[in-house]
Image (cartoon, rainbow, N blue to C red; front, side):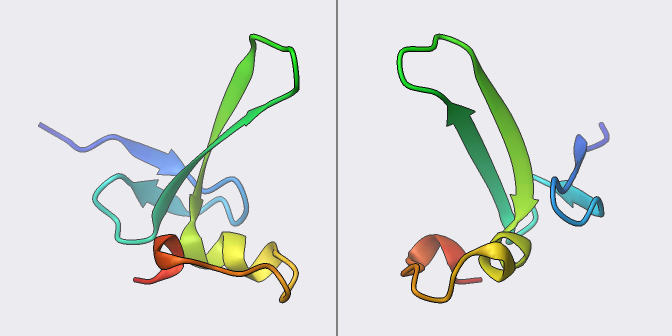
Length: 61
């Protein structure tokens, strides 16, 4: 069985759940039921965040 492959929402390269850099983001707005999920490489997301944002264990690969 083939593993499901996603595209990183930042760099568009392939990404799978078994990838050590796999992060699933869930976006929603206050008082909304709807939400959207994005899949990204941890390094891609970290590169887009302001350096003052503390990165925890989630970003350690």
